[in-house]
Image 1: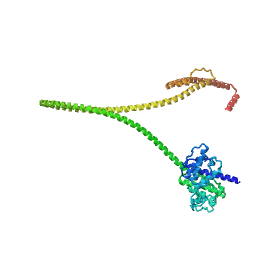
Image 2: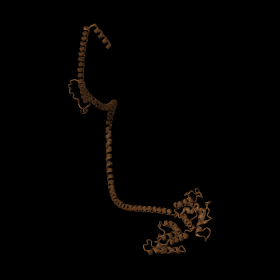
Image 3: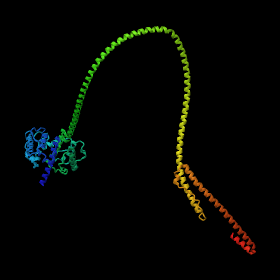
Image 4: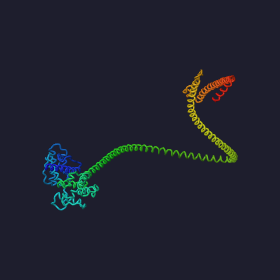
Length: 529
């Protein structure tokens, strides 16, 4: 029984310290899978010592050890740093024990020493208090706002066994994570279960305690101390902002900044390359422009020489032209005096031409007005003709639409008419044969055409073909009717003749018979009547 309890306690410690160690290693984005073998290379041990102490181990150590001696050296450096630099007293584990990883109890004892040295809550009543008392004082201080809690009996207090301390701790760590007042103290087992489950969910603290044992007060004090040590560590990391989530978030932010810096560096490199290319282009353009400027300067000098020559030529030609102008003005003055007499005659001719021009303009205006009037009349007639054309076109379209509808209707009608008329003609022939079955009958051999060939003919031709069939059949029926009427007259005449003969013969017989016989015959006739 004792062995099973010891084994269970060992598993609880292993689970608790694995969580605690990983919460520290997470600050360097590292972790271990198994507490017993996780420090065997010495690398994670050195990382844990640096994180807990907040110092850097300057002694050279092997970051990727393959040989056992390198692993032992790494562990030795870490243990030496703890002893000399961190003043950790009473270490009983050796570097070989850590590398061999075959004694879990030593690893657990080592973790207890690290926890007590680096994670012990600050004493509130002066020096000399124990780790357990300092932890309990921290719990009291943290939960001082909950007046219904009482910790006078230490870790055996009812506030622990009814689960209310756990719920309060959870509510302080993550406000709103649990409705503290909705859990009465009388519901111990439920409170303990909810508290432990939500602690694991919200604070990532593993469940080291059985909720029913906690509710019954059967949990050992050292187990309670270990569990609430993890709570102290969770609060400490939350206050320092060094939780695994915050560190991962910072790492992501740094990676994003690094990515942006790399992208910016690549952009600057590309810009530098573009700038270098632009510099080469500018130098080429500068050389080209320099050559062009030299060409322009030479051209300018040539042009200035040509302009000077042209200027001299201009002045010389200007003097000559001025002289010629003076001579022409003198000649013009003489011509003006000669033409003064001609000006009056020209003016008279001009006036006459002006009058003729005005008359022509007036005539042209009248002609224009007449033409404009005729044009308006023509335009009106043209509009009327265009309207007539449009109406005619519309009427034509309507007529064509009606004709199409009529053709469609005729097509439908002729189909029905053709089918029924041909069937009627065939039926009439059949009935004629039936009616003449008791006489000698001579078939007139009337040929009734098939429907399919007629259906392919145009509408008018179909009408003609069907009319011919109907006319022929009517003619034959009329002849047959006349024969029947003639026969009826003959039959009636014969029957009347026979009847008259019988009446005459009866009268003769009656006149020849005796009176008694005539009286009997008369009575017989009367009885028959």
